[in-house]
Length: 125
Image (cartoon, rainbow, N blue to C red; front, side, top):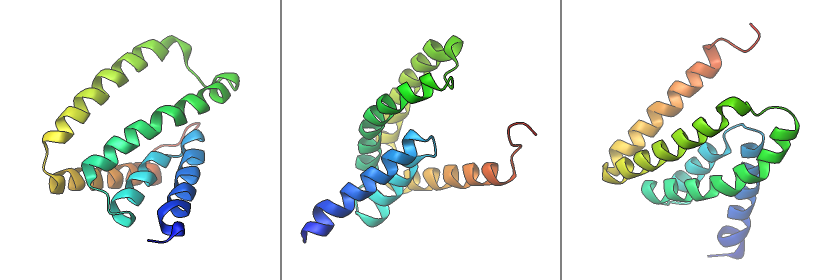
């Protein structure tokens, strides 16, 4: 394995998806695709890596979003609480699912989000 495939490509993908995550574009989703399709990481491991990856990415993006007034303060604590509980429950459920079923569920989710983004009502419309 060369240094490029072992270190440089994963570093570049991590940096790019980190920037996208900070912008709210969904870099974590792209990271999952990279890990499972190109890096050959098991779906369960990729999801665990994605969860760990999200924490520092979100922590680094939060001050900019806060300063820009893009944080809805009244719903912040309930959203954090619900997110923690549901992320834990979903992670626990995902470990019990067959990898093939988990990949299909993730594919359906990506397709649904893509359709929603293409045809859903945009803000301000």
